[in-house]
Image (tube, rainbow, N blue to C red; front, side):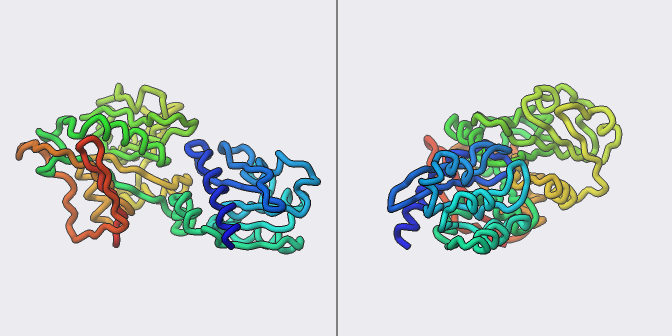
Amino acid sequence: MEKDQYYMNLALQEAKKGRFQTWKNPLVGAVIVKNDQVLATGHHIHYGKSHAERDAISKLTPEQLFNSTLYVTLEPCNHYGKQPPCSDLIVQSKINRVVIAQVDPHKLVTGKGIAKLKANGIAVTTGVLAHAAEELNRFYTYFYQKNQPWITVKQAVSLDYRVNDQVNTRTAITNQSVYDRVHRERANYQAILVGSNTAIVDNPSLLTTISTDYPPIRIVIDRRGRLLQHRNLKLLTDGQAPTWIFTRNAELQNSLTNEQVKVWLMKTDQLSEIIQTLTEEGIQSVYVEGGPTLANAFMNGELANELIEYLSPHFLGKAGTAGILPSYKIMLKNVKFEQLSGNLRIAGEIDV
């Protein structure tokens, strides 16, 4: 078991090499071992391209593969998608043992890959460093277990708990280190969500500084259709990433939709409707960057999984807008603190 953990840890490190490029697919790493020697490693390099098992197997000869052990961080697939089944390739390669960290929570896969391997006489061990593998793909795991995206609410506040120094104005609160961290942090999510007021007042781009072929989709909730009077916003014109708008204004849907902008006409005013649409579209994670009104709606609706707060050691004064003020007591768990050049990052999961 100690050797299994050692080689699985190598596979987990290999999986991380695919970060920011696998889009809706999970990060997966693979290591092939024979006679206590690592013969090949592989990882899921890019969405739509070879899976980790196939990447590793492709580097070896049939003789090397014969009677070897494959360590893989996620259950091999047994269906045809953008790639053929990895389970078939493993069987054909005459690998005689497969060690798996996490059983795939995706119902299309769960247990089927393992069953195929066992049916062909391959010894299978599961659960080796399973928790680490689940954490590696926390959003993917949550999405397929709960059938809804992981939602993180983020805010930046002053010591007197203000998000600006005047209502409806953009105020720089935190420092450059926080600015850089947030722009990198965005790349961890498949969507970034703001309200129409934030879009209009701040005119943000909501881009990430991380190099990726899959920048987060920018989502704006604009129930009334205020964006009709602000057609030159970066989110609508820069073409740097997709923008989705949720509205109840049919005119907005008819006039703003283009190659980069998609408008969804809502039937209700409920955030749950938006979340359901995002679920149907396969969006596994959402980073809520809107102001306190939107953040409070997610918190009070018990729709948020995590809170990230950036705290600056300054006072902005009573003319500013207060930060998130939920209507009930909320406890955070697994809380982490981090100093960023004099500013503080506090992150924790919401215990509801």
